Image 1 (tube, rainbow, N blue to C red):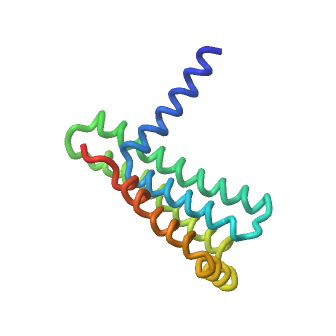
Image 2: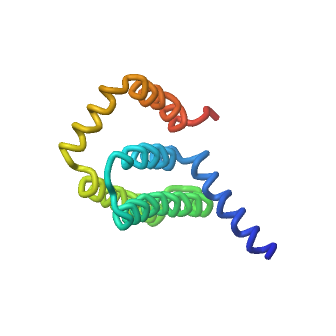
Image 3: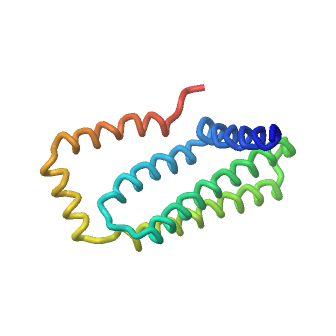
Length: 149
């Protein structure tokens, strides 16, 4: 039981490492927050939410694997190596494909002009909520930028 708990703690530490050290991972977490927030305006089915969560997790998974590949290669390759570069490029390509798939899925699930009008009118009718939304962008940007090392 103790080793199972340790493995969960190692996994959580891996997520923390990505949050602290990987700007792109932080971008994905902020995008996830706003996507889930705006998804509340849609009448998504359980299946659509499942697809949405799988898509989000796939992108974050790809980013974490990319980070692990980069760390492993940097550990072993102290000088320029074409194979190391190719491995990093392939891992980055996996993130790009996952992100492209997420954008396509987002268009399929969320592109609805009438819904955009409804969201716009919602914020127009509730200026305080709109201001809070705009203000929320400040900590999101600061979080993405991360701390100076």
